[in-house]
Structure formats: structure tokens, C-alpha cells
Image (cartoon, rainbow, N blue to C red; front, top):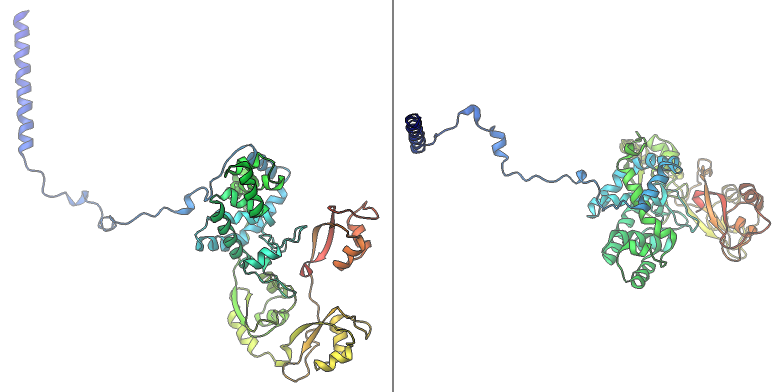
Length: 444
């Protein structure tokens, strides 16, 4: 038994010695000087060895951090149920405007997801009007819009323009973020105003929006604004996951042309071989039927692919069909005859253009007057005003001291109209009450 064990031990030592010798031999051999060609990486991949790989920003799920808490989930549930039809309309409309709006935020080095502020503000509706008279896709009040360079007068309202108003909104949101250093607080300020949020921050001694939300220092509307924005963004970036459908609406595309004087949009449409409605839809900031007279060179949008034919046709338009207009404030003692002599036109033309049945004009009222730029008789039959006005529902909030009669006069409607639109309305209204009005969007 002992003899067998000794023999086994001797055999094992021999095997180990042989293995060690083979390993030493391999170690002393030189490595191969070449790699077989079939094993080499492709040349084009070697050439790109130093290429930097840029992270695609689109792969980021969100450009502004999202929080999924009870408040956000409540808004998600609302959009999926009671608010489903409305949210689907917002999604459908957003397809037209989101691409061009995202480009603007990219250019200004701002998070692209800020475009969804326009979703909860207006549903991307250029003609949206709030009870407080905030207007456009970004719901600018007049003072804030003008502060950020938007022009607002009787002829135009650039708050309605999806591109110009987005540029203004981007600057406004950038300023708010610079002020607070937080996107939730910046968004709350967009809704409530920077001053109110600053006071709430001081009173709560916190720069966390969710602490402000839990306090009594901001309004309920502002408390819900940021969760509503987050819920809308979450759905809009993945609508099918929440049961919504995507749309085939084409993104906003257009050509730009410059008109050198105030020009009738119907004439523009004729020269571009398109409809008046197409021109109005591409230029929602123009409130009237003509480009604004105070601009000698106005940049106008027309359907894509029509620029060359427009320029050719526009150059051939007779001078008498290019009429500049003035909005004249009637002074005491002025009559149609006096105004006709002053502006080298006729009382009949002024009556026809302004829908005046009598010869008398009322001091303090405005009338439209065609200016005789070329000392020729204008072709007024071509430009007889039929502006194709757009009626729009608005929710109007009654101010202190207002009456039904006064509200009707201010909106060019009748008291009977208001009662028809608001069934069960009493004989009077109270301050703060909200009533439905149907008004011409161009008059807003």
C-alpha cells in the first residue's frame, strides 16, 4: 500500500515538472509580429478612433426635471379622463407649432420642454384670449408683451404670432430663471408674476416651489400651474403611452416676402395664388385686412413655394390697387365732405367703406380713409371691405361698476346677445362674475 502511494507521488512530480517546462518555453517565445488581415478592424473604424460621440439631446427623457407626486398624478388622471378631448385638441394643434418653437429655445440655449408652457397656457392657440385679456399662444398681457418687444396696436398684435411671441416668451422665461435659479419657481412666476413669487419665497423662507405650494402665500391657480405643466409635458412627450393619438398635421412652413407699403391681404393672396384665409392663418398678428400702414417694409408670410410667383404678380399690380389706409379720429366739426376733400376721395367712398348710412360722423369715433398716394382715383371696388372676420368665444370677467349695457357697447354686441349666450343671466351682473361673449377676434 505504501509502495503504491510512493509511485503515484513520483508520477505527479514528473507531470508538474513537464508543465512548468512548457510554460517557461512559451514565455521565452517572442509575440507574433503581425495580426492576420482577416482579424484586423476595418480601416474606416480605425480612422474614426478619435471621434467624439455627442450625446443626442433628444435621448434625454426630459429637459426640465419632472417630479411624479400626488399633485402631478392628479393632473395626469384629469387629462386622461375628463380633460381627454381638450388635451387631444392641444396635441393635434401642437404638431404645427412645436418644431419651430423648439428651434427658438435651442437657439437661446434654453430647455426645449419649455414649449409645453404654451400647451397649458392656450393649447397652442394663436387666437386664445383669457378673461384678463391675455392674448396668444403664450398669453401675454399687453404691458409684458410690449416690455419684450411685441407690437400691439389697432393694426397688429404680435402676441398672436407663434414665432415672435415665442421669442418674447423665451426671453421672459430666461429672465425669470436668472432671477430665481429654479425652473419650477420661474414657471410659477410666469403664471403669477415675479413679485408675488418673490414675496412668497421670503415669507416661507424657502426657494423650493413645493414648499410654496404647501403654504398660503400663492394662489391656488399658481399652486396647480407647475404640476399641470409637468403632467402635460409627460403626456405630450409620450402620448400613445397614455392612450392619446398622434396627428399627421404638417409643421408650420412658409416663405417670407417683403411688401414695401400697406397692402391688402386679398391682393397678397391673389398674387400668391392662395386664399385670403391661408394668408391670415400664416400671419395671425395682422388684425385687419391689410398690412399695417406705419411700416414701409413689412415681412409677410405666404404658403411655401409661392415666393417667386408672388413677386412676379405683385410687381405687375396697377398702382391704383395699392392703397394705403389711415385710421382717422374724427374731430369736432368734421363731416364726410370735409374729410373727403382733405384726403382726395369722395363722401360716398367713405360711407361705403365704413358702413355709414348718414352723412354725419361722430366726434371721437374712428373711420377708415384711403390715402391717395398716386394722385389717381383709387380702384375702391376691388378693395370693398369684406374682411371675413373670425368670431371667437371668450370668458369675460366683469369689472367693478360695469353693466350689461356697457359690456355690450365695448364689445360691439347687444345686451340681447349676451343674454342669449348666457342662459339664466339676471338683469344685472356683479364684479368678478364670468360671462360668455362671442366677439370678432380681430377686435381683441
